[in-house]
Structures are given as structure tokens and as C-alpha cells.
Length: 611
Image (cartoon, rainbow, N blue to C red):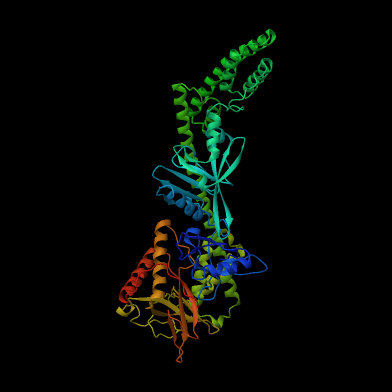
């Protein structure tokens, strides 16, 4: 995998599983003060940030922004991390949890937090907050669609869209944003309503009520929609009565506007105000009477429209037309939410249940399609990787002199070529298929009269370049109960190599497990995490720390030696741990027995030593 060069701006303090977020200053002059402040702390690529769990260090630059960086791996190779988000907002979910916990604690509430990952979305997209009297679901991005009127109250990030019908039906919705302040992020809560700008407040200005999360803007919105306008004139000061004729014209315009937007409530209210108006001229009275008569006819027509609307809504639910039911329900909630009959309440409730159920079905179907696409992409990546192996093996076979290739090596290379070509499928061309057939025939001719090469077990002390097994190599001993089996060999240039799978030209070595606490704890932590992830996802484990470092060297006698400890002048190689549960559990049991024998505490995650 290619090294990921994106700059890391956030980390966690103390350990890989810490929940204490930290943001690195971007300027060099600020980084000096930052280092002095945290000189006794350690920074980590946190697991709750979607990171690898490795330790980080700070990088100071004057020509670009400062950032965190991983410590290099012990073998000198660049560190590989699959962390998706690395910018200043990548730890916002941890800042939200810390701010909400402090806010609720100040109000005597003990909260429970969960970084939910529905349908496998990345960690940090959703933060669930639950306490004794209610709950919130914070959507920091668009990965998970908000669900209204069910369970926890949604709080949307600034990038999460909301439709007009939802704003009209709910009167208002809450939003959240985080502003950078030094090495932290400050939480701000906003209230958005239809045809009103979003107003932002600090958490200390918010409160939890029976309606849920409330801000000063919420109080003003509810008051404006449930009470009459307050008098414009102060008490004790005489208010000038408006002219009756002018008042009549205002009512006529209000009546026309209400009919235009199909607001039955406003038409009824203005009609009553016109009926109560007195003192107008006869011509104005006639105009008002005609307007009221037309309004009553319009209301009768709207009653028919309302009956037809609920009839169509009931039919849409009966015929299972989810799209039409969703549109009609939004219209009914916007224009016919008042004074509903029992039958209308039943139809609207059934429609709401149907729409919610269909939404969940659609989400499940989308998740299934996403899983199918992921499987197809994985198969495609596997085929491409196999094709690259086919090209490499063919290139090596073409350019490698025959006198430097044993029959066993030729057979193993051709066998690998055939297996990878089967995986590559359509990517292998016709000419490559023909070349593979020629190498298969050449390997068969080389093996004529001799059994096909296998991978026999070998014992320590075997000639490193010999492929003949000893008679007692297949039987295990008590000394090998806490060992790791590897195969070592020399290439044609004299270079030393090792692998965790049998090779025809290699010699088997049983490497004792380490006795030092540090290597044992790291190996135990890797194995424990791999087994848990393997059981959880049901597939091969992909992790950058699932490997063993072995070191090999050549003795004066020409024999190759292998160990898990460091040795000056040796060659270090990395062996991938197996992804299958059987070998993993066997190796895990060996490591646990070794730790018990040497009184080493089980610490799955420990600070990695430098050097």
C-alpha cells in the first residue's frame, strides 16, 4: 500500500484508546509553546479517530503548516496508517462528547455516550448522547440520514441538509458547529427555522426542557407562534386608533394573501375580524361582505380538497406507493395539521408509520447494494493484485538464468503462476496464457521421473540451501512448544531471506518466543486485537501492526541462524501474522503461556519504544 502523506492535525493524549483530543497549532511560533506545555505527555493516532494506534511526534516547519507524524517502524520502512480523516475537524466527535459531558454534569445529569457506526460508516460521523430524561443524536456529516420524531432528537452539522417541509412541520431544528480556539475546538449550537436566519449560541446559553434541547431563539419562535403580538405602545400612553377604512383595506389584503397560500386558519381568523369590524362606510361594508362570502365559498372548496387529500393519502398507503405517500403526508402536515378528525388522525398516523417503514427498507436495500459493490470492488482489487503477481513472476522467469534455478524453485514459481493467473481472470491476456502454458510444460519436463516437490518439515541445523529433510523433522518436541516456525534461505546473490510459509529451497527454523516484557506485550496485543477483529467482521484482518520482526545472519560455518531479538550485523525481515483464526489462537496460546512463565502482565497496548 502507498504511504499516506496527508498531514495529521489531531491526536489524543496519553494512549491509543484515549478520549482526550488535541489539535496541533499550524504556526511554528505557536508550536514551541505547545511543546513546552505538553513536554511530559505523549501523542497517539487514536483508535477513536479511526487511526492505527501508533505513537505520534510533532513536526515543526517554517515554510508550511506544522503537523503530527508517526514514528518510523523498527525496520526503517514508512509507517502505514489507514486513518481516513486527518484535518482539524477529525476529532470533533471527541470534542462534542467532552463539551456535552461538562454541560450536562453542570446541570446534575449523568450522560452515556456512544460513537455509533450504523451500516459501517466511519467513526465520528454520529455521536449519541443519552441521559435520564432524554437524548440527542449529533450528525457531524451526511454519512447517516437524520430520523425525526423517533427516539433521540437530531442535531445537524452545518453540512447536513434539511428539507423545507421538515422546517415547516417542526417549527425549528438545531445545528452544531465547532470553532477552533488554540489547541481545542469550541461547540456552538444553532437554531434554524423556516424563513429565519440561523442563530448561534454557546452551550451555557442552552437548556434541556420537556420539548428537548432549547435555545433563546427557540423560546422566541414558540412565543411568536403561540401568542398574540405584544402591544407596540408602552403602558400609560394613549394609542392612536387606526382609521376604520385603512383597517378594512388591510384585512382585505390579508384575506387575499391567506387564500393565495391556502392557509385555512388565517382565512377563518381574518373573516371573524371582518365580521367584528364596525364604523366603515356602506361601500366598504359591501366590499367586506362580498369578500367574506367568497372566502366562505373558498373554505367549502378547501374542505373538499382536504377530504380528497386524505383520501389520496389513504389510497397511497393501501397501494404501497411510498413516494406519493411521502409527498402527500408532507402536504397534509403543512396545510391540514389543525382540527383533524379522528379519521384524519388515523390516516395520517398510518401514513407516517408506512413512510418510516419504507425509509428503513430503502436504507437496508441501499446498505445491501453498498455491500455488494464493496464485494465487487474487493474481487476487482484481488484480481488486479493477482495480475501484478503474474506479470512479476513471468518477468522473473524470463530474466533469471536457468543455471541459477533449481527444479524445485522452478516448480514452485510455476505453481504460484498458475494459481495467481486463475485469480486474475480476465486481466490475463491470451499471449500471457500461452507463455504460462509453456512454463508449465517446462516444469513438467524438469520433474519427469521425480516426485513433485513438496514443502517437507526441517529441523534446526539443516544446510540452509538444501531441500532434503531429515528423518525426524516431522516430529515436534517439547522445546518447540513456545516457538515460531519460519523458513530461511539465500538468494542467488547471497542475500538472506525469511518467510512464514514453506519454500522448497529453504531451511526450517524454530525461533523461540521473546522473554522480554516489551516484545511479549506488543505481540500479545497484536494477536488479541486481530482475533477480536477477525471474529467481529468475519473476514481477513487488515492492520499495519499484524507482523513479526525476525533477524537472520550467517555463522562462520555457513549455517543460517534466526532470532526474534536484535543482533548487530543481521538482516531484519517482517513476517505477516496469519489471518485464519486457528493458527492465530494457537500462537496466542503460546504467547500467553510464555507471559505466564516469565510473570509478564497482559497489556494489549503499550508505548512503542524508539530505536
